[in-house]
Image 1 (tube, rainbow, N blue to C red):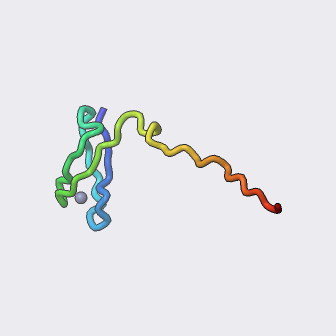
Image 2: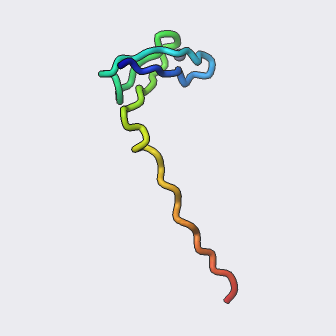
Length: 60
Ligand SMILES: [Zn+2]
């Protein structure tokens, strides 16, 4: 299945299609030659866990 990626270059912003086997790899935008990463299948694994609630002890 092809992967649709959007060029991160704001001046370009072109949409292009990468091949499935290019996932997790860096490809170059065909329009502006900027290097961009094709998102890996499990991108949600990259999400940063929320920081633990800060216990601010007041008083004392
Ligand atoms: Zn581009």
